[in-house]
Amino acid sequence: MSSPQPLTFQDTVLVNAMLAIVLPVVEDPKRIEMHLDIIRQARSRANAQHPLVGPLIEAADSLLIARRHAGKSQARHPERMAWSNARWQTATALARLSEWRLGEALAKLEERADG
Image (cartoon, rainbow, N blue to C red; front, top):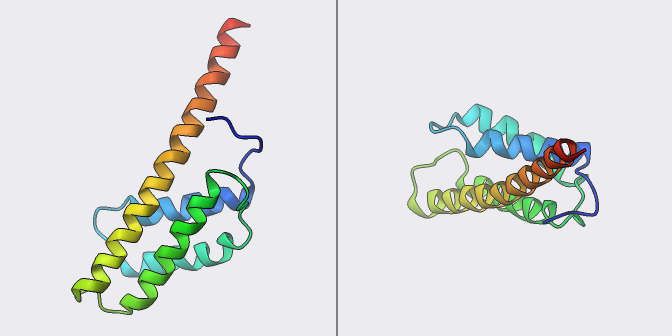
């Protein structure tokens, strides 16, 4: 998939904050809150018109809503499921973005090898 526009700096901030939430195997609540604060700021400035950033913004909203409903306790099952689902949605959107970026990088490598 090729995109008509590159990622903005705000898109990149959003991507990296979301990666910092979904990649750790063991969750650190303080770090999660720090990254959610960054997501709150970056999501409003991210490029919602970009075909791969739009789903990231939707996933960011899911993370923020799930965390707000979970409050401080992660022990209750429905709230925990909402958080898990939001992390899954985020990981899926990030994987699609990563595949696109990989394709773009490989295309540039091929261009250089041919030139």
